[in-house]
Length: 419
Length: 168
Image (tube, rainbow over all chains, first blue to last red; front, top):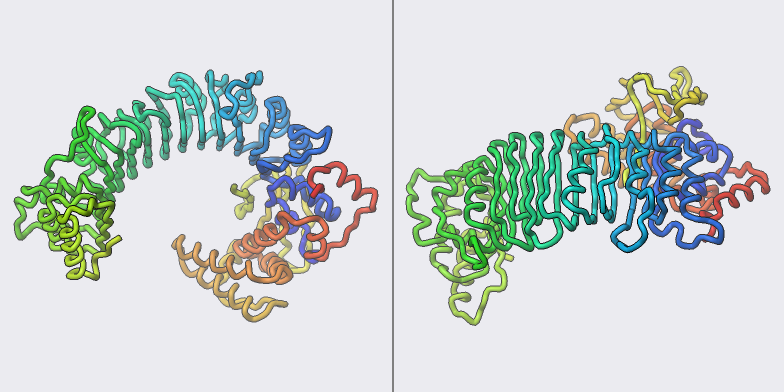
């Protein structure tokens, strides 16, 4: 090490970020001590200060280390801290900080007296932030933030807030290109307008009955969980879309044209048929389709899907390359009239991979026809995977069906695998 | 957690310590030019073309297996513009380096800095940093053969200042 140029040693040391390493490297030698101020990124793990001796607090220790850095760009604090501490740190590094990640832990003890000013409000001092990630945030009222002009990435994991609070907070982050809200509780009618947004993952925790209106004309990637009503009008750039609802029913989806959509995933226990058919209709250019919707029905009653014509379906999704479908959709494609209109000129031009999850042995004969048609007309088909779940055996038709599938597999063994 | 590293290859105005490698002698240790306003480490290589070695290089003080692995990286990395090929090359070199003794890696760092190869330097330096992380002061001194140039009082003062980091 002694033979390395100082510059290189400094370069090596400046990539350390764990606060404990930074502190102890100060002790190795004079050259190393002199290199420590050039660190760019500091990370304080969760348990780093679990055994502090009398007189030391996390706030002051963090402060001491931060003060020794000449230009800190990234700060990650998972250990506990107070808003006073945060305010004092940001007084020193606020202007140079580009990335900030904090474990707020507000949700752990929601009855704790609210620090004033709150930790959230202190963040404002880091006015040049490009990325902000917060864990466990309780937003009782919108933080009084000035606009974070440079903030491109915002991630909040574990939060509780009301609709208006979210809308107002996002007014301070107009230039976001990435927005992630995971495990967000307390929201009912979400309204988000972010004109630069490209990538977003939204997960609303609760009854699955949120409504979402998103105005993000540049959006390319969108994942939404927990909404029953979704409206995204401008979708000229949307390539990847995933809509899931584990807890509630999806009533209505409203999207603009999805002409560049390559990948669509729709999941949930129950979707209204209108919503399903609209999605399928809009996603005409889609290459990858994943459908795991168990039932349809506009009201409480869980209904099976209506019949879907096999030929029409594949003709209206000509670019389909991979297709992953679960029970209900497979059953819909396997109705008695589904294979009407099959003629010799029909083919499924791009399909390479199919995954089918089957649960019920009903209509076994039709289902077998559907499988055979997929193989027959899918000239490019490389892989067909069949997942057979929890079939109610004891019913002899289940065994027969399974036998049929195995026979089918045997005849096309290069293609088909069964799980 | 991302470790941000600033390595600039273009001569853009940045207020930083510019550590220029003097091309005339590979033993020259650059002296840092300190800009007090904004101090960050950037390593600038004046010679851009030197970052695209594809001809095999010979590396002093390492065994033939190591030399071969480095050359394989240079060949693969330099042969294609495709990101997946370059990432594969980096991953291969990285797994190889992880299995080598730290002394070899330090030699490789010196080599990379002498020949001004930015990509190699980044990989080797990251490995050294990974080895340093989570070690005690004594372990680090031993692994890298570093002499302790603090007086006992100076060292104790540092340990007192960051008491929490030294209590194990």
